[in-house]
Image 1 (cartoon, rainbow, N blue to C red):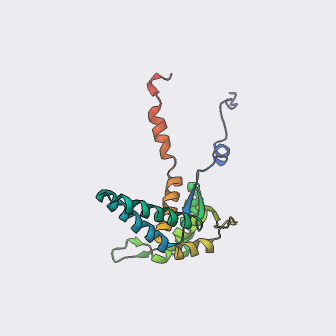
Image 2: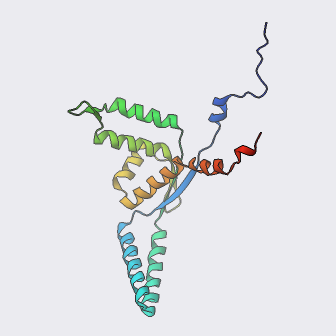
Image 3: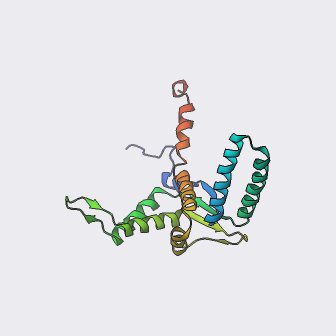
Length: 189
């Protein structure tokens, strides 16, 4: 009879993967479109004045820009997002597909509905957003309803910033490609 004892180099892959951490990123959002527009317009004017060599007006406007930025900083909120496992993404997609079955077009191809797309985005954001810090320092772990309100009411620029952060933590493993390229596989036994 053959002895089939496990090799001392074996390990439990599920346990190993379950203990891994996910990257986090914090993004500032301001929820003040008027101030954002004023900063953008002031910055454009500064660029023009710089090209024209209008030093005095440039210096005066630069002070105004600093003041605008400082006032905006007092109203910032911080949103922290974290990467999530692929299984959770698959579970969310399965849930949305069950709640909002895809419809068929004239050619029999499945197409999603706007309601399904919005529900999917809200649930994915809810899974990624781990904390929101208000300007006064108070924090919440947002509910699905909080995330839906954020997605419905926040300025587009802030939504883009949050989505960019989610994309970055979701694709953080792209950095491993750089690490893999730096390994000299031919020199290893």
